[in-house]
Length: 200
Image (cartoon, rainbow, N blue to C red):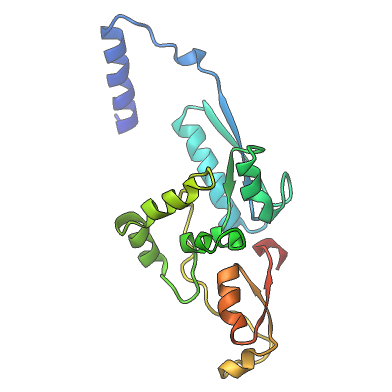
């Protein structure tokens, strides 16, 4: 018997021992909409939201259902935070650094240029007060965040011409995932373009 069944049976025995029949089938189905900043074509990233929704459906025996909507289906990629804040939808799947314009602190909950690798970010979040700090930050936006994957630090790119020195960045137009990396590279003369991943 697996752990979930054992817990269910133990809980059922406790309810029956108390003389009250559970109203399991009378519970309404909870339905949420989750908007993603990513298109379906980016399955390695967008697919995480689908896996999450399926896991929630299974763990709740179908009583909690989350429909996942790709970039542009309900809101544009950079509109997901506003949609959650206004209660137009219940959840979002995104990269926090997309919202650097609202506050530079959004970038701290995601890939920072020349920052943590995936293992270091997880260690900071889980054991170094990172989660606590991000929870306090998101509370100011009336939201709660959870990790939904980790791409690690993002630094580098694909270039038409070889980059040999910092001066080669001067005037270079570059797609960047978030405002912080744009600010850093703009100091080298890069012309940053903040595009969602699906628009590359």
